[in-house]
Image 1 (tube, rainbow, N blue to C red):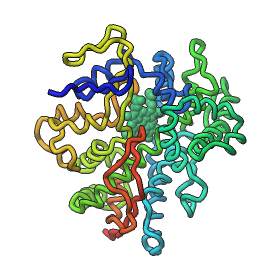
Image 2: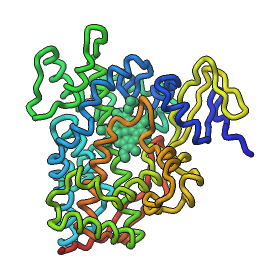
Image 3: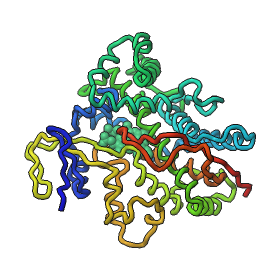
Image 4: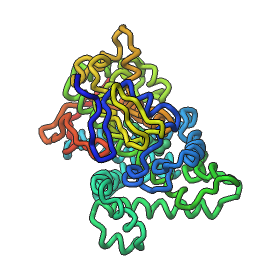
Amino acid sequence: MASPIIRVGPNQLSINDPDYYDIIYTAGYKFPVDPAYYTAVGGPVDSVFGLSDHVAHRARRGALNHFLSKVNVHKRDQLLQNRIGTLVDRISSQAKASEDPPNLSELLGCLTVDIITEYSYGQSWHALDTKDTRSEVPLYLVLETIKSWFQVSRWLWPLQFLFHALPFWFSNMVAPRNAKGLLRLEKLVDDLADECIDNRGKNLTSKNIHATVFEASLKADSSSYKLTPSAIRGDAVSVVGAGVDTTRTTLMMAVYAASVDQSIQQRLHDELVEAFPQGFDGMTFKACERLPYLTAFIKECLRMWPASPSVLPRKVPKEGLWCRESFIPGGTTVAMCIYLMHQVETAFPNPKTFDPARWLAEDDSTLREKYFVPFSKGPKICLGIHLAYAELYMTLAALFRRFNFKLHPDNSITGDWKDHIMIEVQGNLVVTVEEYDD
Ligand code: HEM
């Protein structure tokens, strides 16, 4: 039997054995993150995502947990419904006016930008309200460029520090297109963070009903743990950075998969008509979550196209790790791939086939649930998991209730993708749309 361990660097191993996921990722902070990797791709070093010190990480997650909790996400149903309503209207009018066919790569990018910015910063980017969605380099394009920047910064990480040290106007002038995106996002966050930092110590209540991510971060501030301004900015960039492309890609691939297999799309529509006979009314996160086929469909999309498919490196603790017959010494970097977890035959027979029904089978589902880790597990499990699920459920419910999608001849995406730390789907999802009148 082939070894599940491959050496990928002088002190770095890749492990492909699903039973080690819980050992490496779930066991508290026993296997700490590899700081070299998180410095290179984690965005701001002093952010919840980039932090490698586990005491600081726990404090910062604690502060953000409530902000992104399921209870808080449920309270924001209206925010999501408003934005999704704008998306649906836009697709409908574009289809009716027989303008260019809807480009869902762009429109879904605008949707996720608008939702995460309103949720986190208290003000929407209004990308969906811009006629030409590419005209002003909206945030989803900025984040698309950051993704390709990771491929450079992962290996040439000092460049990251260099760009941060330069004045904004200068970096903006000289930086390559990819880095410009990151700098521009940070500049915008700086302006909002400054306002919040100026108010530090005052009893903050945002102009909006719910706290912003800046106010939420400040909750980690205590006499024993002092939050720096760059930490507040870092968290604001991390949450938005992690929350745009991930959900956008999953939504894109979901519409693609349903467009390719019309029997799947019909089954989704039938379930939604039965659950929501009045159309959009009552399509809350809670109501959508109860639908078994929609749930199976979303899980299958996350299994096939986990937005963060590749390695998440961790350090082996000093006592070392036995992996099958091999001893791995303490200090070695080990990593597992979420994509490979989702390809394990014993849990997911015919893993390359897109089959939502596998989630409804009445067999023993223990292994399926155990190896399904699109949001990872343990202390660094995705902080935005509830918001991500809300966006997926509510958007897909609204789209498949109202429209039937087919791939347009101009469509250029397939089920293929590249590993750019996050999934990189090349091309554009272009669709023809038919509107249901029931
Ligand atoms: C389908 C959508 C999403 C997927 C598949 C996904 C996946 C992941 C994964 C696998 C991680 C763990 C990374 C690691 O161990 O280093 C992670 C972390 C994170 N995610 Fe998500 N994510 C999604 C959406 C979101 C959204 C919408 C937000 C923002 C609200 C978000 C915010 C974060 C943050 C802040 C972290 C860092 C947590 C930490 O370091 O403690 N994610 N995500």
